[in-house]
Amino acid sequence: MLVTSPEAYAHGHHLPGWYDAVKAWTPRSVWTRAVGAGAEDEWMRLLEGWGDRPVLVKDFVKSRKHEWAEACFIPSARDRAAVSRVTRRFLELQGEDLNEGLVFREYVELVPLEAHPRSGMPRVREFRVFVLGGRPLLVTPYWDDVDGMEAGPVVEAFAEDFAHVRSPFFTADVAQRKDGTWTLIEIGDGQVSGLPERANLHTFFPELKSRLEPPSR
Image (cartoon, rainbow, N blue to C red; front, side, top):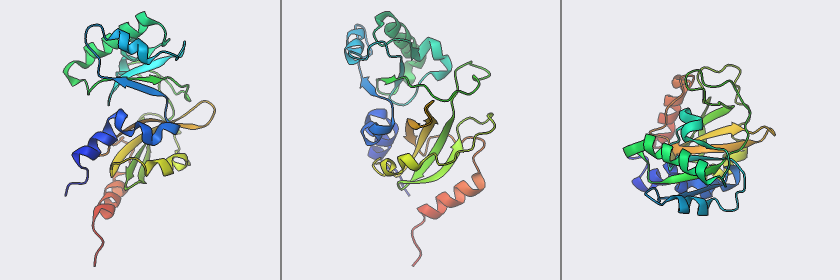
């Protein structure tokens, strides 16, 4: 049984597909397919009006967050040299794995946790939500090795917007801002999104099966 069509997959996995559906809850973003020689002019045009705000660069699906300072975080949107350096390094590291094009995302301050033990990237209070048929199926901490991560009412603010994402099965990564509110970091296709190690598989898979099965007559 095909749960997600190719069109729904692209909508729920590529940022330009899902962005408008959850625009109120996710950092401001712009995107382009310009990655070749001379593309810096297009990047700076997209970032006009962003001032000195820090931004993150990624492709339509993935970031290089574990190379945070090298290929992800740009301290100022108006610093052409920094935009070019970090973005070009991102493209170099992604290589043939580049997904479609580039996305620039406004950086927002989130509740910090300890840095990643291997890469040193900053980690935040973040959860992964599996959504099936517009309703949450599972809420689990994003980081497997961080204690004291009770989800609480993480998904309440997003529930109505989840229904606007035109994919039957997707994940939403949500994180807590320093002011206590929640923001949506990423949406991905549910079929290819990883299950964190702490996820309760004994409840997840039976519930997934139950919701996918047609009602008995």
